[in-house]
Amino acid sequence: MTLAHMTQKTTAVERILAVAEPLFLAASYANVTMDQIARKAGFTKGGLYHHFPSKEALYLAMMQTDLAEKQALFTAMARSGGDCRSRLRCLTQAFFELPDPKRQLISLVRRNSNALGDAARARLISAYQQALPNQILSIIKSGIRTGEIQTVDARLLAWSFVALVETAISAHGDRVLEESGKKLDFVLDLFFRGACGPKDSGLGQAATTSTAANSGSAVTAPTAYTGTGVFPEWQDQDLAGLLLACRDLVEDGDFPTVQRWRDGGGRVLGHFQVYFPEEIAHAAGLLPFKLRGAPVEPDHADSRFGSYLCSILKTSLELVLSDRVELDMFVTHPICDAARNLAAVWERNSEHPCQILYLPQNANSADSGRYLRNEYARLLEVVQQVAGTTITDDDLRGSIELFNRNRTLIRELYQIKRETPWLLNAEDAYCLVSVGGMVPREEHNALLETVLPMIREQADSNQEDRIRVVFEGGFCEQPPLDLIRMVGRSCYVVDDDFLIGLRWILEDVPSTGDPLHQLAQAYLEKSSYSPVQHDLRKPKEKMLKERISAARADAAIITAAKMCEPGLEEQVCYTRSLDEDGIGYFVSEFEENMTSFDHLGLQIETFMENLMYQ
Ligand code: SF4
Image (tube, rainbow, N blue to C red; front, side):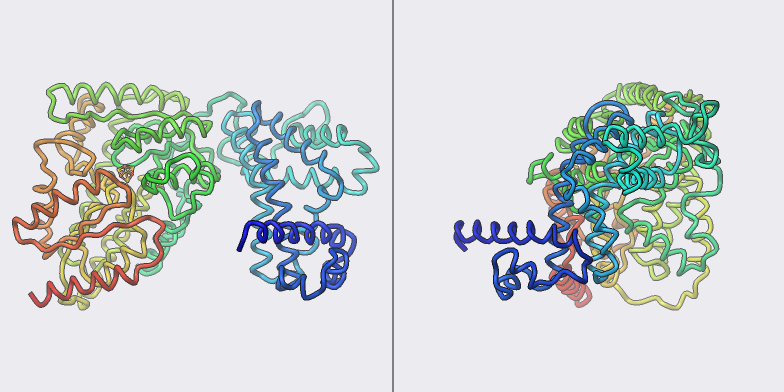
């Protein structure tokens, strides 16, 4: 198609959509016909169908085009400077100042939604959410964070605000409030001060949650784990139900447990891969949330990074930019150039503090322990400010003990993988560990204490003669769950480095003495390995072979995330070393949002068959 053709086509579509708007505003959806639209646009009916196969497609395109324009406008308003109230004012004013027909168009979302099919209705509602409620939501969330708004469910507040705006522009609102300045004051005053008389100007008791009414100061006291949990779906389930709940949670790109923690008044420290001393966040009452990217399109984050970088950087930032998760602090590490640069990009694009934790570059230096202890102390200061609390040594010791218990339970899970892999498939094992990075560790411990006996008690009759493999390459960006599932169907995955940070420390950390020193020593002296930690005492190829040997594995799958320099470099060392020892291996790459595994699956099956025949 030539440029001239494309331009003509765009112009024709624009003309059709422009004439359709007043027709749909003036009549119900059912009463607007394709004939009418064709005549108004100067097309034959056939010409109109050439551009839009149905009235529904035309209507959807019209609404989506309009909502995309509104989204661009409201996003800019939501990101304008100032406090929450002034940003809400900017956004609402921009809405009130739209030309009447454009303003009214948004009311069609509700008016005509029942006339559409399920798929079209879902797309329309999603476009509407992105355009308006989500922009209000992001302002309200930042208002809650700064203490300008009470700790109330942010989504409820956003919907309430939208309802107030709709009330102000109703026919009755037009009569009573007359002009847009009065409407603006009405909406903002009612939202921020309520309808109480002068003696009581708060939002009122009905709107507050029982957990964390904010006194109005910038920092609230931390909310410790209450035992009620943010992940109730696993409780009172049989083994199949519990594993399903974990899979559902791991696959949920909206991270509902993090939102529930926030809804209860808690604050969240997000940390990037690979290892982070989560005990420090826990001791401050924060939820340590392990950011491991997600299989989402990086629509907002893509423009912030070069195309030559790995996916996890983009999708981790995307989670925050698209309001899927809300953090109070973010910590990254200079594990590679890409992750180091992430800090600068993150800081510019988010409102919460962002820190780089400088883990020692040379783990073999005599000073590395002292250095790391002091680096943890520096970070602890920032964590205290974010949490609005003081962390005592006893707090830290309590957290160390809790995390020791968690590490013990994860070790037990891996023991099951190694000794009886037919009792727990690769995918479920992954999900059970992964949940630990997104719920309070107390809850993860309770879950593992419940599920491990259930796994062990299963009938031991499903054992098959399968190849046993170690899966290597999941230390930072995570392979898609479907890939793990596919591999697990071809062989027993008896060990791996998925989310290695959650089991980085191999033994209990002493809960005596200086806790920061103990954590630093454990990081250096009692730890696993990964391509991003350089320690001459732990040659990675030697460590891999020890992992293979301890798991009595027949072979290894050596993967790396696309564009991951450390992972791809290490593949060379791993394979050379495995060649020397005659250990079979399969090399591949993955990307967290890949969706097609047919080709890879065939290759892996062939690899397994070859091993079998050998
Ligand atoms: S996947 Fe590799 S390149 Fe990307 S952040 Fe992690 S270590 Fe760095």
